Length: 590
Image (cartoon, rainbow, N blue to C red):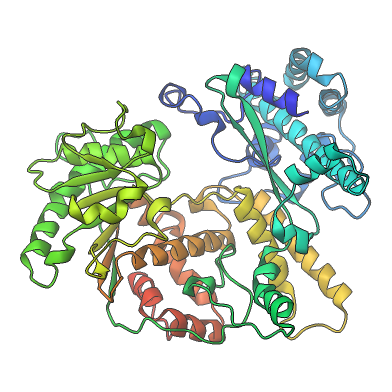
């Protein structure tokens, strides 16, 4: 199955993604294969293509009947009577039975040798239902990939179980398989999460030179990470001291109820509040396209744009941000005695390439009089990279040099993931950074396997009674049902933030706020004040009430009184700054 999937993608027999924007392949060869993919990732698009009678719109969840119909169409082996992933038996009209029969042949032992013939048969079988050839080809690609990945899920589970049964046989091959398929220490201690089964994600890399570099990777998410972290202190204390009396120290952002990957499900006993009032200012700093641009006067969004349009928009943001805000800001900071040693700013994006485009825009800005640095990979420091400006205009630095940035720069442009945690940019023990500008909204990807598994497991944990249960079996079954229902919600939801299920939307933004609170900490070293500016207009677009302020307001409204009190005491000004930005009073949010 793995060979069939990989060779099909490398030879372009089928594609992981289809783009309405024809310029994408020319700009980035491997864009079609970015990110992790689950078997059901394209169910929304598949249902709209195969069963248009359901009229699936972006803002609505997928109908359960449509999901059952698609599951029944795609073949799956017998997984047991109690497995909710098993397709519901369904009688199809003869034309759909023919499609199901061909998909069954795809995963047969000889399917890899008949791929082209089977794809042709699918074209013939689907022609009466989908007349447009391009649309039909898109549906067939998604069907084939869903079928092959679903079969891979089952095959990997069988391989893992078989290898485990041979663990003590002395077979080196079995142990190598077990080691390569381990999910990590968490699954070793707690093999099953609340959903009771793993989630697999797949990714294809190396397609630019497939003969040498093509690789299909799988990410196996299993175990119960939330219980593991909340019990880790007790386990370590019991093992090392013989008593379960832990003091387990974590970052303040370990408590954030809707942040499904970051929140630790355990009581907080001691904490240190950020009590310095008005130490963080969070505000909108959107910029508009300049005169002479075809969109002159319009605010510039990045997230949500076609990939082919982003480079130009990023360069425009860099140029306009410096001309309209940064130049005056840095000059003012440098003139004030209280901020002179901190007259520096950080601009963030989501990748090295995006940072390069922003740096190119700043290099073109009128009246540029400040020193600009851009974070690059080690191999790009001295190379001729198309998206980076001339080194004489913008200095290139690597991660190892970031803490030395104050010596040779006023503006640092860096990927958010590289600087949100761990790095301290200080001068005389005080932060050397005054303001941080988020030029691109951080990625909010609903089908990332790690986030999805965290969200699903958290749903099960949250369904457990806080005071315990007299019937643990029933409690675990309730948790499994809650986790399964939540997984169904994720799979049925629109992937776009603006039309996503509201609970999922809030979970996504909660995780982003945790990262932003950590990011703000880069400019708070030594008790200094800082400013956090949202530049990307995607933060502010109020379409479908999906702007950041509206989502934060809804999140705060869901907090229970105890959660509200805990958030106020743990975070203080750190969370109050974001609530103030959203027009919410932490003491009154309910």
